[in-house]
Length: 128
Image (cartoon, rainbow, N blue to C red):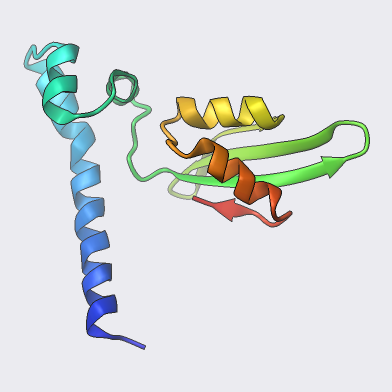
């Protein structure tokens, strides 16, 4: 069912996606023009880690993350994290809690502990 508020939210999400997709191009163009990393950081508000990831080709803004929780008697609780770019899985690993949270933080997930907590609450895949 379509409502004016829902339609506006969907349009806002589409606009956000277009802006996020252009972010990487703008950062790469600025660097190619000789703008220092520090200046890109100060002007854009992006972290230096994010800027380096973009410049290394790892900054696709619309990657999808899938988190699954697995419990096993011998290994304990593991979190399988998969990063998807379109329909292709570009990275996957199974990690213990602290390593999973650190890996998510390194990928730019600001609420990594909350993501892991949500995965702990369910054995179903969690998408973020």
